[in-house]
Picture 1 (cartoon, rainbow, N blue to C red):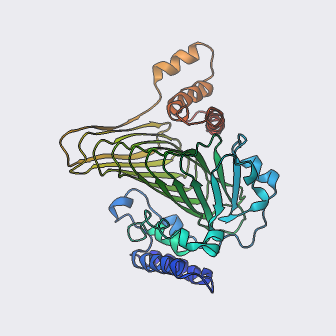
Picture 2 (picture 1 turned 30 degrees about the vertical axis):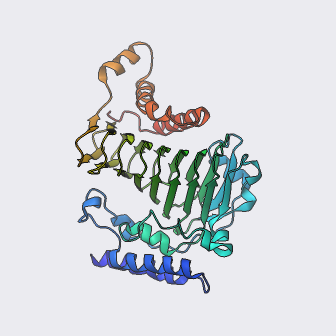
Picture 3 (picture 1 turned 90 degrees about the vertical axis):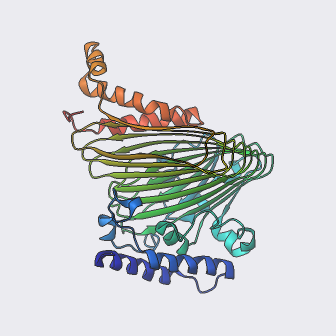
Length: 444
């Protein structure tokens, strides 16, 4: 570990000591202490780590952060709703710099039996209800940013979908980052879909900071019981000078269905870690992702699908769009355990480079220890089709408009797979606006 990494680690540990409450329950104290020790031992990753060899944290290491936006005021409800994606009459739960903001939320409109609670309140009033779940999937010993987030454990959302419940409207969790002083923001999400339930949860990460420079380090743990059906959409629109790391860890039981959709539209450095364990026969998961990086941006997606038992299915499609000197990283790993016969697993990572300076490092992986399986994986890197571009220009479209149309078509496969048509349309428009900011005349 370099001196710069040691100094950054020590600065974060000092902040953690400052943030430790005077009184906390034994369970929470133990969880935080174990995480602090794990982070102290690991520190921040370097490019010498195999899992981080293509992603440097040099800019993050050089930064210094304050505690969670303690100098900032709560934004108005109008500000919050102006940057959040359309609510679609769903329950709106807003967190400002990691802390629940009841005045900006509309829990009464959640509809149905789904229960959403502030993690801070549950930790205070009934922490024993979280002990069987919190920290069980997200390992502090294996993931340094999980260790960092858990050592600061404070607030977030606890979402419970009761047995056999069928929620007809989405649950919208909005995580706003505000303020001009670089600070830590580390929300935690725990989702439990009980047996036979059905729900859709949207995690919306957005910055309304003018200066940026924040570190938003989010961890989500998702449990699906037998026959549960859960959709989870993660939207990320980071400030061009801010850092975003997310860890999503899911466990599925028998005949459950899980669909994850991750859409990343920028940030100085974004690292998404997604792990799914198929622990019950008949479980199905789908992982879709779209990431767009421009000048000065790095977006890194690491996924792991663990087929632990027989008769499970997984499908994964991650698409990257890289422009300017933007950089993307994709490492998708699928593991089929020795007893996981009759596994079906497909993985694909197509990438589109829009400039000479854009870069993608991609490594799809299959580890198969069973013999009766159907598995495939692949990756592709390319530019816009010159024949298609010529065809569109010959029919009267300008060059930039034609390029935007082709790029939108490339992204449409992922965006149309979102579980809400209105959300899909809104994100497509957001993508077109971002592409419209491209420098005229840049080579594709």
